[in-house]
Length: 225
Image: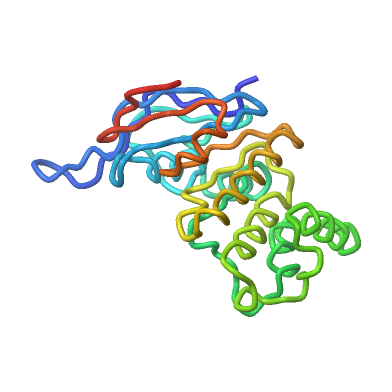
């Protein structure tokens, strides 16, 4: 089953002689339970591709569907629902709210989905245990290491049990040993939950853990292994 379907996807910025083709006619699918690494040099279009698939940006041309739901052409309320219920995001900069505890950060997507407090608290506990941070539930991001913050971010991304996990350079701010641990955790989560993951990365260790690798060059898909 294809969780991600991308066809003829392009994204241009600017106009006329100053137009920049950030992405050009990219097509691929990603199946349920597949971890797909997206690699390429800076400026190759990795982040643009992930932002389009996640509904954070709009394409110039082409189509995207996630878990059978159209992303292209969806209105903002549908995109908000898609990002809340179907897609989980992990960013290089972690994106945690500094004044909230680890548990409170993880609970945010479930609060937005209006889940019952008891069920929400139970799932927060399960997710923090899953990422190895059961003992740090009450600590704030500033009291955690970079690797621990990224584990909290991963737990938050899993809060509403998404079909698709999008991770943009999730190890970019981490040392090699910590990054390797995060990669192992991502691989384990994908295998255990049968979800699909798209991971933009330069890291060869992450690429080695992927089921498939998409290579972008100057906005074009040049290789799919």
